[in-house]
Image 1 (cartoon, rainbow, N blue to C red):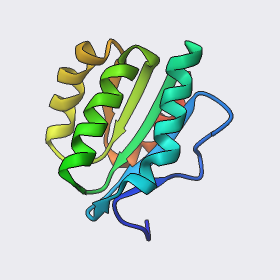
Image 2 (image 1 turned 60 degrees about the vertical axis):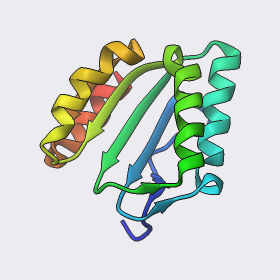
Image 3 (image 1 turned 180 degrees about the horizontal axis):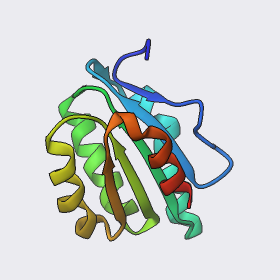
Image 4 (image 1 turned 30 degrees about the horizontal axis):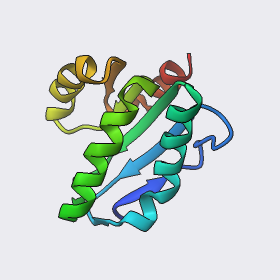
Length: 125
């Protein structure tokens, strides 16, 4: 991954229900997240379900205002997330997936990076 922070992946399907992105060390800015927010908002407005594929290559930095915006949007979109695959080798991702699932009312699973293809197949299933 050449870019740092937040990057939509090539497998992202902007016309469908799959949002695929990667996070890495680097700063995440509101302008990078704007297309993502629009899709969340549209799904909430339309009553559509979203599936999320998230590769975690590192922990990005978010500005304080962006953290508030992210929490506000994710709270509103909680019911729109149907299934989420968290892909990465960080030890804490498995525990995060278990803790986040009830909060988001979604199926959330953790996959090691070596199982990316399995993660994508599962999130699309």
